Image 1 (tube, rainbow, N blue to C red):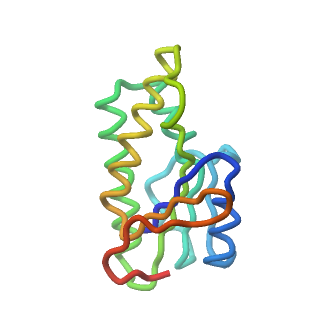
Image 2 (cartoon, rainbow, N blue to C red):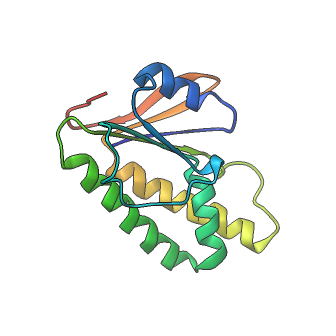
Length: 149
C-alpha cells in the first residue's frame, strides 16, 4: 500500500498519474464515490483511492472519534487484504493533509481534523510506502517491503 499526502492543490493526483500511469481503477470521494471496503469487483491490479479526508469527514459527522477510528481501521484492513490477495496488486491511497494550520473553532471541524490525523497515522503505519507531495515534488518518508510501484 502506498499512501500519498500533502496540501490541497499541491499536485498529488498529477504525481500519482505520472508515477503509476492511468491504467488502474480510480475511486474518488471528490466525485461522490461512497467509502467502500470491498474491491473484489475491481478488474485491475492498480487501485487508486483519493479524497479520503472527505470520507473521514462523513464518519466524523456520524460517529465519535473512537468509532470513526474503528470503522477506518476495519476499512483499511480490508483494503490491505485486497492488495495482498495477489502479488501484482498495488493500492495507492491519496489524502489531503488538513491537520496543519489554525485549529478550527467549530467542534465538528476539530473532530474531523483529529480523526483525519489519527486515520493518516494508522494508514502510514500499515503502508509500505509513504510520500508527501508539495508543489508537485515528492518526498518519500517511509519505504519498506518490496517497494513495488
